[in-house]
Length: 125
Image (cartoon, rainbow, N blue to C red):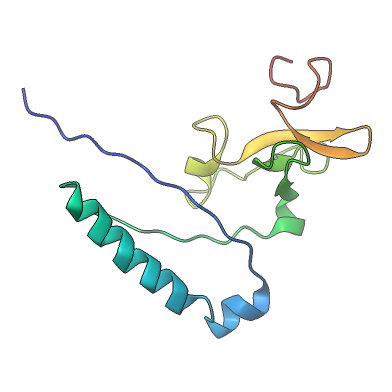
């Protein structure tokens, strides 16, 4: 039986409002997209979609884990995490591991895997 194998690819870069408003990163992203498409073709893969979203770090309490560098939402500061709108739902940790839950422990922002088990947002809590 024939099947389609669909593979997702996520990456991120840090930016600021000025770069977004000036579209100054667009040339780099376009060049990257072109190179990625050529690389995929070399392996007989087809590029279907590219999507870029911006997550306001302060508003969403989004940061990087200070121990492992995973992207995370500090649930101690934003208990509701993402608002489940279509824009965010595929990044939420209920569905996959793109932006994880996390919290603060001993003054450090840590993702759910790096938090101790006894912490409210620890992986097995």
